[in-house]
Amino acid sequence: MPATLTVEGTAVSPANINSTWTVANSPYVANTNFTVSSLVVEPGVTVFFNGPYGLTVTGSLQAAGPANNPIVFDGAGWQGLRYVAADTNNFLSWCVIRDATAGGIRLTNTSFAMTNCVIVSNTGVCGGGIYTDSRLWLEDCAIIDNEAAYAKLGANYFVQGGGLYVTDGPATLVSCVISNNGAILQHRRLRWRHLY
Image (cartoon, rainbow, N blue to C red):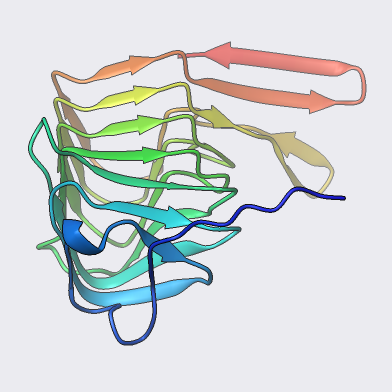
C-alpha cells in the first residue's frame, strides 16, 4: 500500500489567496495550483505544497522574514514559485525555497530582487534553482545543491543551469554563495555532470 502524507494547517483557498498570511495560521497547505495578484507572507510562515502544485504570481508577492524567523516554501514534489509579468514591487527576503521539482523560482518577464534567501535542493530543466529572462538582483543569497535535469528538443538533448540560468538579464549577484549545483545529462549509457 502506498504511503500517504497528511499535512495539517490552513488550506489555501480562494478566500485567502490574495490576503496576508500570518504565523498564527501557519502552515499554509496548498492542495492545488494557485495564482496570486496581491499576497503578503509574514515572518515565520511555512507554505507547504502537498503534491505537484505551484504558486504563480501575476501581481505582487511580498515575503520578508528576519534571520531568526524565515519564511519557508517547501513541499512534496511541488512545482516552485512562478512570476509571470508580475509587478516590480515583488520581493523575497529571508526566505527558504526548497525541494521544488520544476525549478525553485522561475521569472518570466519580471524584474526581481532577493536578499538573504536560500534556494536549496530544487530540480528543474534550465535552472534547477532559479531561471530568469529578466533583470535579477541577488544579495547575500545562497544557491546550494540544486540540479538541472536534461530535456529533449527534437533529436538533441540539452541541460543548462543547475543553480542559476539567465537567458536575458542582467543578473547581479552581491556577496552570494553558489555551491554544489549540477547539470546532469543522462541518456542510456551517457552520464555527464557539471558542478558549479
